Length: 98
Length: 121
Picture 1 (cartoon, rainbow over the protein chains, first blue to last red):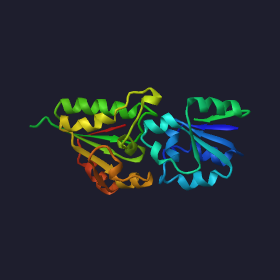
Picture 2: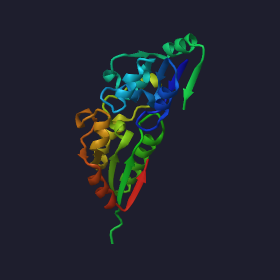
Picture 3: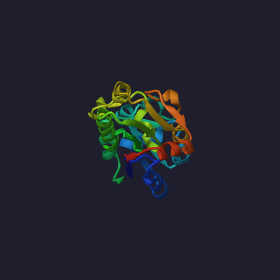
Picture 4: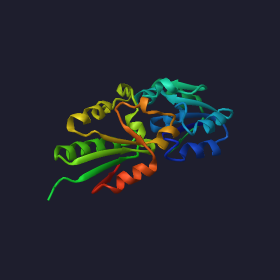
């Protein structure tokens, strides 16, 4: 499954619930969700640990808008809008954790 | 009797994901135009509003990083940032687009206590 998260992990628990509930597949972080992949944030250890279970992607235009494209943590793949579409096509289902 | 009041704008939301940050700036500029004693506080995800280097072309949204830099022209120079919120996001004052005063939550609380009007975004 492709899990799509658009909330900051330091403001809402959407990503936390996604990580705890999901059984694997991928997590695509978009909008304020991209703050999860910024190096040095306090959610980093949780996301790092989840990388064993999920592939982690972040939407590049959202990283750029927020000035954090140059501080993406290792193990995260940045994708553009075309890559977003490819991910949706690649997985059997997708779930948005709003 | 003075008709100047102390207005503090408390910003706790990240930019772009919601409209709060932009709306706060609009009201800040209005308060400044009325020559009020304006200050801005940034805490929680609000500190991301003043993170340097916004490039919003890709999301096709108007960027407003430059507006924070222009606040000085409106004599809005009191920008306070919660140290704990910065640290939790791996940021330091050097990562911010404007000069600010970084302070503890306790100090920020005292500043809030001194205000006549608090507007929360």
